[in-house]
Image 1: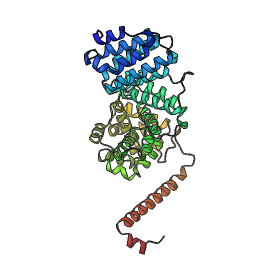
Image 2: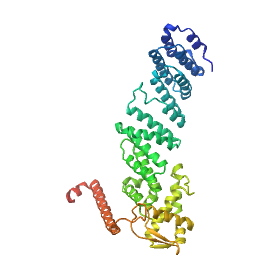
Image 3: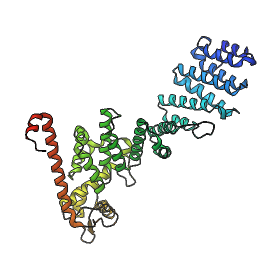
Image 4: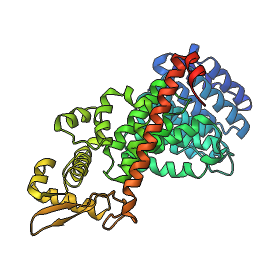
Length: 420
């Protein structure tokens, strides 16, 4: 696209001795000298003049800053990208580019913002990654570094590139402890949770989402959303004692009952009840695409989690069961049912043994330790005592919940009758 006649004439008439003033005058009057159709070529031509006229560093900074300010005032993403990319190429080729790092950083951020507005998140992340953050010619605080890296992580997560996002998250881990901004810390925790979720490290993701759901810095609707994500990740986690503890923490959260769509399957998992295919199918509708991905074994993450959960439920109902009957209950063929059982026993998530001659599975009836090997706890006799403690704790929490409810509804009655 050709430069407009007015801008071309003004550029040609600039006296090298007063080039800075001439260029600033063109930029300030660009709307009267140029129309929308020629704005990109005209602004680019002014940028070219900054380098072709060999302005001093101070003058070049002044003109480029004014050019950037004018470019933002158009509030046009396509214009920002077109002119911004052109100027960045000129800056990268310029001999004095190391003295114009602030202007380069501002251009990269402006172009990245325009790409984000257009939902071109991968391009935005690449532009943000070019911002000079470690140069000796430009001092950047840890907070400013974190702000850029958090944006890069979030942009990569928008296109499901968890590998690239994790590389920048690792950079964040080195400096986040120096940052006091609560919003940046919250974005860091959320990014960490989303990456763990994408990597199928569901227990870690569930714990992180649950912590974020208590943050007063986000709206109530967002807190419930992160709680819902915590529940989904806990449901998708490998069955075993570690997941049972995660489910227990979430089940005690009074807000969980509000999430009707998620609560039914979640509650059955916590109470060790068998799940039907209809319930699982309904629950799967609320999951994200990466949570429905097919594993190396040919099943989805949800299907694998449900099969392992149902196997644990069967171990509480039977002391022994034929492999064929177990396969029918799990909805698998006999070979896969045997493989699933053997894997969980070997990983310490299920207590039992397989008699391959009689084709029977025997369950020990104790709580698994979650450690590799036979899964036996060090002192199996403590199982009943731990169950007793858990029941006492649950009863105490229920009594406390009832007393709190009474205090809210009948404060005078509680003041007169409740013994403290």
